[in-house]
Image 1 (cartoon, rainbow, N blue to C red):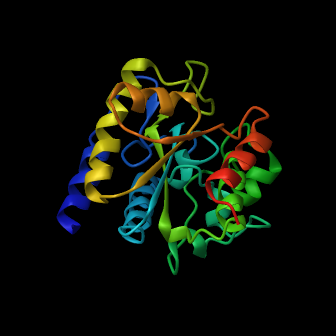
Image 2: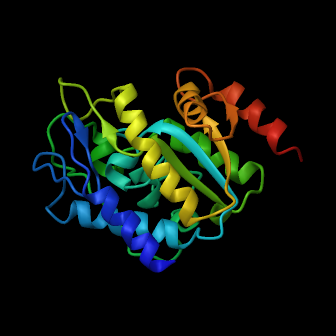
Length: 230
C-alpha cells in the first residue's frame, strides 16, 4: 500500500502544463513563502491520504482553487483551516497531530490584511468540512478530491481560477482511477456537473450533488441530507 501511495505522489509531482499550477511540484517566488512550499504541500497531501487509506467516500469536485488547495495541497481545504485560524474547523480534523505550516507569502503584493494575517480561506472548504461535521461523517472516512487535481488559472495571474478544459478533465481521470485502485470500494459523490459528466464518459458510477459555489450552498446541503439522512 505504501509503495502504491508513493507512486501516486510521484505521478502527481511529475505533472506540468501551461496555465496550471501543480502545488506539490511548482514554486512561485512571488506568492510562495519559500522554495520549500511545494515540499510542505506534498507532505500535507501524503499525510492526508495515509490517514484515509480505509476511507468510504470520495467527494469529487472540479479542480483546485487558489484560495484552497493551491496553498494547502489538499482539495477543498484552505490554508486558514490548517493554521488554526478558522472559527469553526480545527486543523486536527484534517491531518491530526502534524507540523502545520503556511506556504503562502504574507508579504506578497495585493493580499488583504486578513489573508496576510490568517492565510487564504475558501468558501467551498468551509461548507464541505462543515457538512462532514454536521452529518457526523468521520473526517478519515471521507476523501476530498478533484477530477482535475491541479490548479488551472487564467492568463491574468496566478490568483485566479479557470475552468479545466475537456482535455485536462480527461487527464485528471487517470489520477482518479489510480486513487480508486489505491483505496478500493470508495463510494463516489461528484460535486458539480464537470466531475459528474467526466466520470460518466468513462463509465464510472457516482452519486451527484450541486457544487456549493456560485450560490449553490443550500442545494448542496439539501442533496447531502438526502444521501446521509439522520
